[in-house]
Image (cartoon, rainbow, N blue to C red; front, side, top):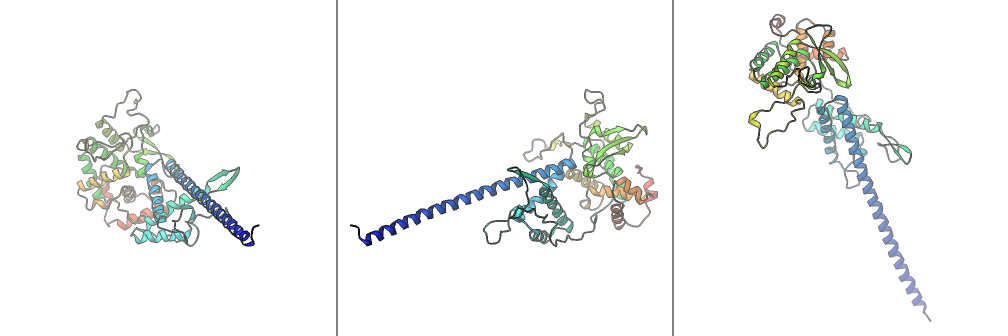
Length: 402
């Protein structure tokens, strides 16, 4: 017969075993939940990376510019680098893209200021990443037949763009505060120098490029993407030419390409060996889809281990165009060439129009500004940086007719 003590011992042992098994099951279940959570977070990160790529694809397709894509990519990468140092309260992990709120945005804004970035650069970063969150908010996914939002709170409710919510205040900037339009004297020196270099392929390209920049006032993205199919003789004005370009927001427009620019471009193409009218597929000189402004390979760079790799069939970048401008300014003897930017050639165009008696509405039309207020800011920048002297007589003696 089993004693009462023995029965009690069996009960204790049985309870201990059950407790152990139950504890193991709970631990295993917790591990499974943890693994599922990690897998879900990994999947979510992959989904958000796809969203970034889709957003960049959209930006590039609208602008038809790889430079635009790189510009937006740099901004979102800087945002991700900032978040890598921000930790979720009470947890040993960093904040994810979908967990941010306006306090993180304000902290990032302050960090960029502390790094010494200008207010215009800070605002540009905020605008770029705000564009990404607006894109995400506009995206939908179907899960089990139900349409869901991608930027939501814990209850599944769609959240506001953190860059637009809260009390975020963008820093005030003076638009075009860095504008340095060329003076007439600087412009004359620059063109004289470029003309002296136009006997070589590279020199001819650089002369045609800078001349077209200043003569037309076109934006860099519009000009550098010029294909030969976009250029045609004018039917209404014999001896003149038309450039069909696509600008900001996908806006398409025909513009006059001055004859001086057209002939300078053809001169460059001839020296480059690319001008072959009558050849199959190149009846008009170049193939229709061929870009005009291609890189030139310097013989001294060939075979060098660290020589930059360039696609000879793709147009030069704005960075390359900037090097062309600053090198030419230095060669022309213009002081402090490093202070000039490619966009300053557009300001120079506005500068020359104003100094030759064109009114504000005419300048607006030539620059294709949608608002006269924007043109007013250009004029303000020109007047701020412009020394007081007489230009009209000087300008009319130059080779270019604006």
